[in-house]
Structure formats: structure tokens, C-alpha cells
Amino acid sequence: MLGGDPGSERLIEYEAKLNYFLPENDALAICQYDYKRFSPGIIMSVIRTHPILIYRGRVSRNFYYVPPDEMLLPEQPFLEVERLLYEIFERETIKELWDETGEALRNTELKLDEIERTGKMGSWEWDAAEDLVAWSKGTYRIFGMDPATPPPDYEGHLKLYAPESAERLRNAVGLVMKGGEVYELELELARPAGARRWVIARGEAKRDPEGRTTGLRGTVVDITESKLAVEALYNAAPCGYHSLDSDGRFVRINDTELKWLGYAREEVVGKMKLTDVIAPESLDLFLQNFPRLLKTGLVRDLEFEFVRKDGARFPVLLSATAIKDRDGRFVMSNSIVFDITERKKAEDELISLNRNLSEAQAKVKVLKGLLPICASCKKIRNDQGFWDSVEKYVHEHSEAEFTHSMCPDCFRKFYPEFEKENKKEM
Image 1: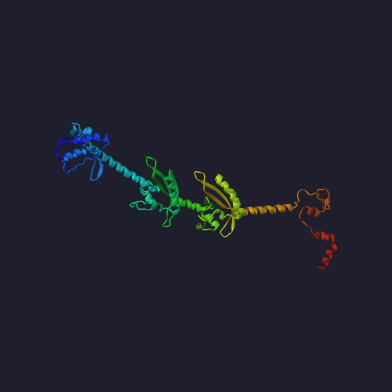
Image 2: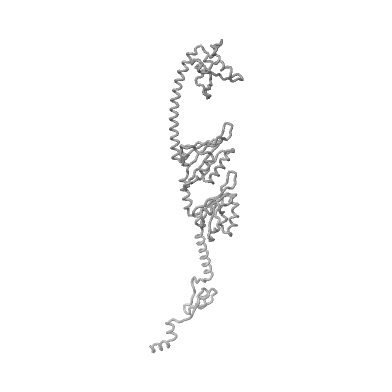
């Protein structure tokens, strides 16, 4: 072209027609131009005939590309004017739509932020291949981090949770990445300042068009206030509550039951089993009912004795429910416990009272009904029809014993001489 060879005047026609040839043949082509050595008019026409441009090392789609069907028409200049006018109109329309979309997006972001703020929740996404994490403002608020800083990577994110919660989250994420769908966990956050905080963490798999899991997306909800309120009720309850893992070890216990047992929480949770606080004589009863808990998921009103730290014993009434996974395997149990010391004491007193009453009734011979008594000698007719003295009848029908004496009237009647002697002495 620069040498003025014959046919070079048809350069633009040649470039336009290449757009017919190259897509239909096993060929690639790069047309290279030094725009400093060509006239601006030729460079403009070259730009219009190439759907893709490489400029300053960047490959770009060409918005000014004119298809060959239009480029080779005789009225091309007229069509060029129409195209330019349409592009001006289209660009302005796109700008207006962009401005409207941007405003709508900003309003949506503000609404989303308000929803997250009032709902104490946040959202996030994780690209596993690049280990890239994106957080919403609500997620930054929950974890107490500056939104201007980049969110931590996967391993760094796990450090925001208490150790046990971090391990549970790691296991759940691993299951989802291996083909699972979702997880939902109650997790405790790390507490460098000593204040306990909890969240509900939900996550689901992100998949590519081929169905491969590429990462996760999900939400976190701050449940600290409700959790503390429930904990306060849980610990202040007049009855005992505890949860056991599959090995029968305490994973949770309320203050009431701890007070009964005389232990500190650190001595019990994760270290002691329920069988450690059951009196040896009651172990058989507990072990006999444990299979029923595994099978039916419920055991009610088991009565046995607990042993305090100081060795003292007290009776309790326990009901338990089992929690199982989706495959029916036992995971943990929750129990409610009542101290029935006062009830047992009242029952024992009632039993003792009834026993004493029965013994008394067995001993007492009751005098009842109409007694046929002689109006003269005062003898009483017994059940066999014989007449007994009052002394004999009462003795046989009661526990009464008689000692004989004499009233003053009878004494004067039967021993008048003694009364006369007494008067002389006076």
C-alpha cells in the first residue's frame, strides 16, 4: 500500500471482504498498520472494517465496526451518517439508562444495608480457586472490621470464630465442597475482649455451568441478644438442664444443675460424663433405659440419685430426648432434671405416718355402738349374751387398765365410822 502498487486503491474493499473469507476458512489474520505512516482517512476506514482491534497491547471489541454488507454499498457515506447519528442517540440513551441504573443500584445498596443493619445480618461470597472473599457492609459490622479493609481469606476467616466453632464450620464447608448443598450452623465468635457473641452461619454451593462447585455464598446473622436472653432463662430456670454428646459427656449444663452438683462449669463441660454424677446404685437403672432413648428418642421420668462433689446424694427425676442426624445416628441428647428431695421427704413422711396409723389401728380396740348395761349392778352384756363387769368388758375391748379406788360419797356410805373419827380429831 505504501509503495503504490496496482490495486492498492482497493485496500478498504479488500479489508471489508476479508470478513467474509476468514470466518469460513481455517485461517487467522492480523492486519498491522502504523498509523503514523497512513492518512487519518485510511486509518478511520481500517478501524471500521475490523471487528476486533489491538491497540497499545490491549485487545478490544470495536464498537465502530461496519459489516461488509454495509461497508461495500454505493450509498455507504449516507449510511455512515445514519450510523453516526444513531450511535450518538444510542450512546445518550445508554448513558441515561446507566445513570438510572446506577441510581437504582445505589438505592438498592442503601436499602440492603438498612435491612442488614436492622436485621443484624450480612452476606458474603467465596471463590475457592482464587481464595477471594467478598463481604457486604453488614458482614463487616458483625465481625467488627473496617469496611475499607479487604476481608480475610478462608483460613483467616476461620480465626474469627471460637476454636470449636471454627472446626465445625471447616467440616461443614468441606462437606459442601465435596458435593453437599447447604449448611446452617450456630457458631460462637472469638472473643478477644471477653464478650461472648454468636451468629447463625448459612452457606450454599456456587457451581459453574458444568455443575462443579467453585465456591460458596451465604449469610451470617448476629443472634447474640436472643442467645443471651435464652441463656439467662436457661441458667435461671428452677430445674436443671444439660446436653450430652454421643459419648455421654456434658457439652452444656445450666447454672441450677451446676449449683446442685457443686461443680464449676469448667470442671464439667467437655470433661465429665453423666454417669460420673449418678450414684452407683442407680447406674443399672440408667443403663437399662439408655437403649430406649437411642431407639425411640425419648425417656421420661427416670428416678435415681445424683452424687454431689462433696459426696452427698440427692434424688432427681430426669427426662431426656435424643437428637439424631439425617441418617438416624445418635448425635446428642437434651435432658431436663428436677431435684425431688423435698418431694421424697414428704413421701417418706406420709409413708411413715400411714405406717404409724396402721399400727395404732391394729392395736386399738374401739368401743362403739349401744352397750346393754344393767341399771342396778351396772354389768354389761357381751356379744355372747353373758353379763360381764364393767372392768372386764372395757379391758377386753380397749387398752384401758383399771386401778380400784373409792369416791368420797361411797366412802361415807360404806365406812361411816371413819368419817366420825375424822370429825372428832378436827
